[in-house]
Image (cartoon, rainbow, N blue to C red):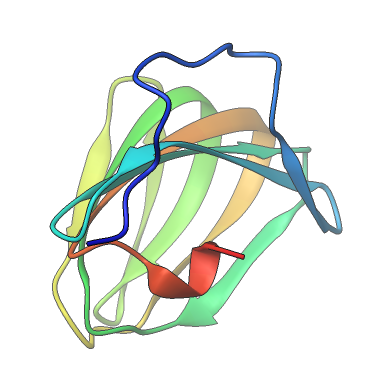
Length: 112
């Protein structure tokens, strides 16, 4: 089974620069679940995409235009969304922000 060995994490370490104003930090995972923090600069885009994982996203900071299953809404701090498996979803950051993503099962494609 794959898993992140660290039981604790430092909020300032292990950030991956995804380019175009987006950075990601994997907090922890095993084969069943993964939690990730994603920082967005203003106007950065999380492109429309789909995957077989269930995803729950919490808006920790900022304002985002979120498209989920052909519906678009403005979400702000304290809001969130659920992206069912294989549903097209994505975000546009309207004000610098942070999303906390949880995936089940974990995103193998995020692990190097």
